[in-house]
Length: 92
Picture 1 (tube, rainbow, N blue to C red):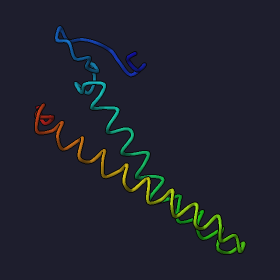
Picture 2 (picture 1 turned 60 degrees about the horizontal axis):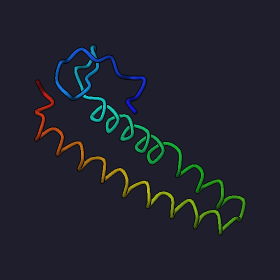
Picture 3 (picture 1 turned 90 degrees about the vertical axis):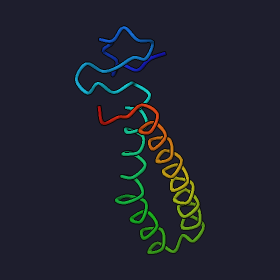
């Protein structure tokens, strides 16, 4: 199922947005990258600090594990975007 982002203006099999000219799947990678990065760089450290201040060491461990998982996801998405850029030449 394609996202609501889709505004197909291309006759090719790939669905592209009329404004960005990006395929939906490329846009999805960019969107997920932004969300993961936002969580990693502006949210999770605050959660860890709050748990430390409250003496909730088990929560510190959980937030650190989630942070590590998110960093792995961010790296996976970056690799996907690099591959997309090479295969599709996003700059066009």
